[in-house]
Length: 338
Ligand code: GGG
Image 1 (tube, rainbow, N blue to C red):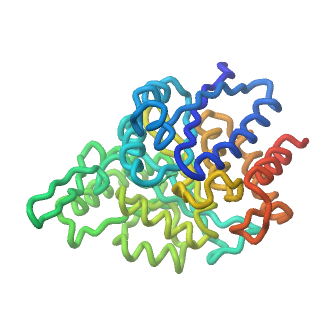
Image 2 (tube, protein in one colour; image 1 turned 180 degrees about the horizontal axis):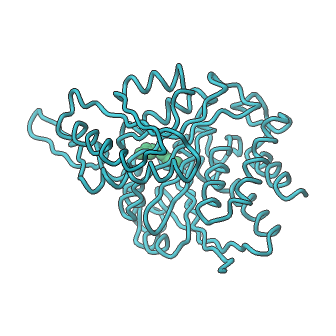
Image 3 (cartoon, rainbow, N blue to C red; image 1 turned 135 degrees about the vertical axis):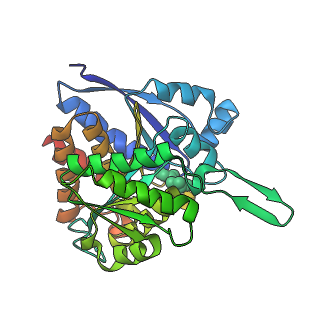
């Protein structure tokens, strides 16, 4: 078995630098603690740093570097480079499924203590495809679906539900209004759902689903959402579990996956070592699962949860004054027993 994994590290802008530094503390601790897993890091620039060094926000050097990695950890990106960077990675590497767990953790003050659902956001089509035009006083962005892309995300969601012991997949849409895209996608959803008789399936309009996330998250399990809707719905989800400090994500394609916190670059907190790295550390946990190391992933998740529950090391967003790196060191110590 190949025990060496090449991990791409892309800090990006703002607090992306802080949270990827925290992730390195944990990755280094894993590398030191496990003889059968070694990490080789490949650091790459996007955003402001890339503009300074290479003259482009998503340079060829980064694109080529990503292609050589087993998995990539990404921090955050903000305006004005967000579209070019996120589409360069997600669309450029066909990372079509964006898996965003919404789970309330003990030790965190949350609106919905029982919340445990997963938004699966279609990541390469829909309204964020970036296709549009300006014509006089008409300004248009198109919501684009292909049969291939729709089928791919629906099948991925059922397979993911099955593999992860989930019981239900809910398809979200606005078919009453978006007849070309959402009505077609809903029909396809039920055609494919018939092949997964072991998993319950239902559908909801996206606005009703957003309210459901807030009021009765326990009735939801795996939720499929169009690209833009999924972006919004996962932030709504973050709102019920203590904020975006707790929302990791995995962008998964056929040959590569990229892991990141759902949050953006929050420039006012950048380089202060104060932000909550939990979402990034849970994204690392998802990366370990992707790399086939469920054993280490489970230990990492347990360590994150026990540091939060113990409450001694807390970042400012959850009422403490510990630093980003203090939190990462506490998680690393819990993980390796040091
Ligand atoms: N870490 C993710 C990040 O930086 N997100 C900022 C952003 O612009 N998100 C929009 C999106 O995920 O499509």
